[in-house]
Amino acid sequence: MKNAEKIRLIEAYYRGTLTGEDNTNFSKLMNEDLDFNQEVQDYKSIFIGFEALHLEEFQKTLMSFEAKHNSQEKQSANTQQQRPKLAVVRPLRKFYYAAAAIALLICANFGYNQWMTPTFDQHFEVYQSIELHQASVRGANDAFGAEQKIKKSAYSAYLKNDYSKAISLLEEYVLEYTETATKDYQALLVLGVSQLAEDKTEEALLNLSLVSAQSPNSSYKQEAEWYRVLALIKTGAEEEATLILKQIQKRKGHIHNNDAILLLGDM
Amino acid sequence: MLEKKENQVLEAIKRGDPKVLERLYDEIRQPFLVWAVQFYQCEDEDAIEIYQKAYTILYMNVRNEKLTNLTSSVKTYLFSIGKNLFREKFRNKHNRLVNLEDVSNTNAVKVEVDTDVLNEYEDTHQKEIVRYLLDEIGDPCKTLLNLMFIKGYSADSVVREMGYSDERVVRKRKSLCLKKLREMVTEKKDTKFL
Image (cartoon, rainbow over all chains, first blue to last red; front, side, top):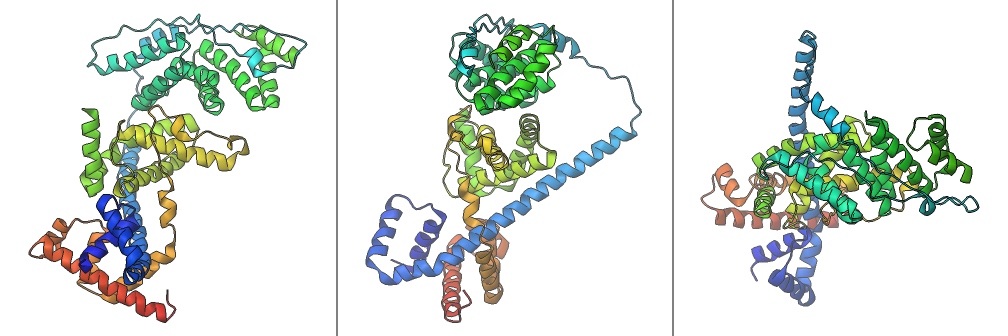
């Protein structure tokens, strides 16, 4: 085998890209040729060093990409500072109100047993009386239509107790339509409850915390607060859960006011 | 169709196509930052740091053929790496989050994500050795090896950059230069430099 060919095999070996016939030839040489063995050892620091330098170079390139964004963002901030303050027109506000009016009624009915230690399993139940007034799904090629389709399938899976599918679809929705989805508190609430049902408690906590902290809609917010309490109990953070429950207990109009009183009594 | 398009993107990443790398970086950056800030309640700077780390891992996994085809989008893959990195970050901060499932079970589209790739190249000593050797070896080997291994140029691009007649010559030169480096390494080994 020519020297250039041997070096090519060694390079591929250190890159981790040896496959098929090359892999066989490399192993054969390693077993039969002591000089090749030595050569492989000698090239180790060279190829690892080259790869590390390449990585360093790539990271410099990323910094240059980022610098471009930084200067754009600074420019845009300056422009906004110079611009006189005008009345803000929010053409989508109506849509948001409509979306907010799409009530998500996740009713939880819990069987309490005062003589037993309160556990997550005793208190958590996802009911199917969820009412979803979906916006009509327009043409499939339309981005809005595609977005609504994913959500519709997700909610449909949720209603059929297929929480795993609901999670998968809603996570896809979050990834594909991130900007809309991070403010779609209905979808995040359904995602959080599904994750809770599927024992993905840490992830559920992230989504439920987001909804309870940021949702302007009080019903989503209150539902999220309740399910967050259950999630906290599940992770063993009972002190934090108790604090929230006491706050809910004080708020007479809270959807889960009675549930909170009962759960606190159990605890 | 999507798969074909995404795999074409992977091919371009593997070639180190600067235009594709920049376009992809720009396209996914904003949604990634929005997602990161909203879901992980982090500062912009942290979100950018994680994005760059995720992007580097994507690049290295494609380059080293750990990722050869995708059934989801590049964006989904990148978010999955990001998710894994955030988990690592939180795992270090809160002991409560230690017992988490493997990230590949929790993604919208299940993907195998290898984030260890960066650890393999953290040894700065190896970098210093190669930097020293390149300075010692001088041109044209220094330029050729720098272009091919550090800048990631293809043989074809080196032909244009260095004015060689064809790719065959470049490959032969490359092999000779590497051989020379090896000789230097062997010599230095005796002087306990390495």
